[in-house]
Amino acid sequence: MYDKYLEQLEETGKIRNLKERSINCYKNYVSYFLKYQAKPPEELTCQDVRTFLLAQKEEVLKATTLNLYNSAIRFFYRNVLHMDDITVPRMILEHKLPTILTVDDIKYKAMFATMYSSGMRVSEVIHLHYDDISRTNMQIHVRDTKNRMECYTILSKRCLDILTLFIPFNNSCYR
Image 1 (spheres, rainbow, N blue to C red):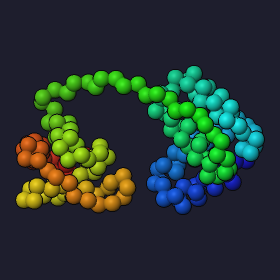
Image 2 (cartoon, rainbow, N blue to C red):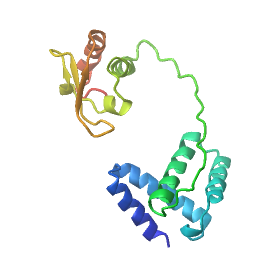
Image 3 (tube, rainbow, N blue to C red):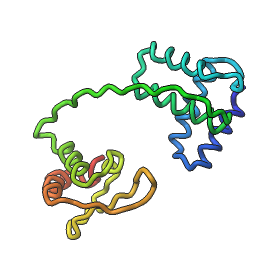
């Protein structure tokens, strides 16, 4: 019943150059929303989105998941149904203090040192390879960036020392 709309959503995501994973998540979230409402998408209103998100909140979903639903549905309304009047506020995220890591956990120490000193994202650090670290130039080659561009970033001496402790045991870096 909703296949036509989900295909349009996928096509629009590809045109916008969204990553395949994002497109699939959007399709899943929108599909769930459409099945929940069980009415033609053209008849859906802003209140339908609010009702759906409140029902999901009652199922004790986290704010980040609800915001993903919200983003997917807004993308669907704006880019597939061409309705710009969707204004559903995003949920405020809870900020809990992180668990304190032990000094012996060299893997996480190396990851955090790399992110902090070079300004890299978690996903970029996770995809690092041994060959990406240039000790002579004190640089890190970043391959899988969020905006799909390769770049170089700085490598501090202290971070290199921590990485040197971690890398000999594990040549694939952080995997």
